[in-house]
Image 1: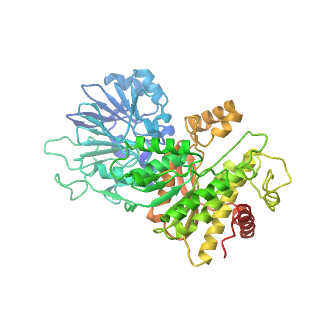
Image 2: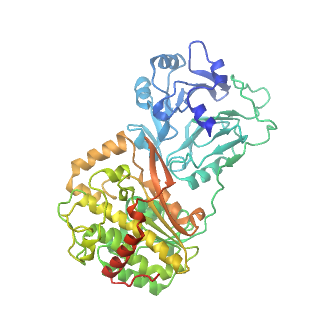
Length: 582
């Protein structure tokens, strides 16, 4: 991948040799649909991405944003200015606002990436191609980011953003899972949409450009990049993906926390992929509304979504009796569960006093840990009867005091479980201190990690090893008032909104619900995650607007087997179930 980054910083030597004396933009090619110029002046804010100006009678189009520069602006004005700006995805927006102000041009971006370009005038919706003007199509290609798009000029010139690029070493057009920030299966599916195009020129944002065999009499690039040996006009460039497309077999999945946030985003994607879902909700009103929203989002039941594919039984995680009733109904029905996803979470930051579950336990621990252990233990017979079964547990990096999130405020730490051991009425799991809402949440996520490791070990020692996958979605702050932070906003509305502005909009260190939901859906279904054993994945921040999930080690306390056993035994007693024997 060295050439990927080398070519991302400015122009190649071949291009520089053909750059006009007065500087960029440099003419790359002439085509009946328009002359294509390379803008140069790459920006650190877009990680050195290439941008292009298409000069057309219908009005010039700027594809992605170069660094704003007065000299370049005057050169663009001399070529006729900019009538529209197309932003292929969130990473390559750079100085879009400066260019839009200079030329008064509308900016086009997909709604799923629109938060990276506040004020964009034209938002592309859904997955249908959009005709920007005659001879220029925008094609949504979600994957690299949720809102990635490519532009097709004259049906032959493909501006691929960061979706695809040419690999000289492989002599192929490639896409990379390593540099996929949103969802790899979606990117693979998007690549399939482009296979039948008659691409003559591939012009990416990052990576190598490449011309394919031109028609007789058609002008080549002014910079003499060689065509691939052996290519003929009738042949098509092929797409060599670094990982093969996964095969998806429909699964029956139980997902807690599916009524909002990450869980709802995952549920929608799973239904689109043809999986069956059970979404326990805290009450009948929430259950009915969740089902209605999902069916509306998918256009009704639709093909592949018969009525039995989606159900929403009532299971209030703040009441162990409600959890028991839900589990008993599912056990009586007897249908196996292929994936059990323990995802629901509660954070009450800013609360001065603890809230209580129906059984009198501190509510954060009750919902995030105790109810999920109760549900898992009760439903384990259905899970073990499932097809290639697995369990997925939504944890958080804040369980680890050495991570950026874990270092803010009091660290997670369970001590000797004195508070939990005392039963109803405890304020903190470790006991001995007054209630601290932030620490209660961190402790609950540490409990999730210890529970997941203890469950995997018990299953393995009983001769029934299964995948138990813990994961951290990263910091997810939606733009609406629902989702994960809805409880915290009640205690500090202004503080939460300022935090969201800085983290999500200025520093861009957050994941969107769609991005995190896609990762959760992949963990629940991907065959690559089917190997038995415990694994922990974290959605890590690499830079502004750039996240990548990776296998990481849990905190030292999360790896304490003796603590995990004590927590397992005490928790099983509190939820009224015998411990799963070793």
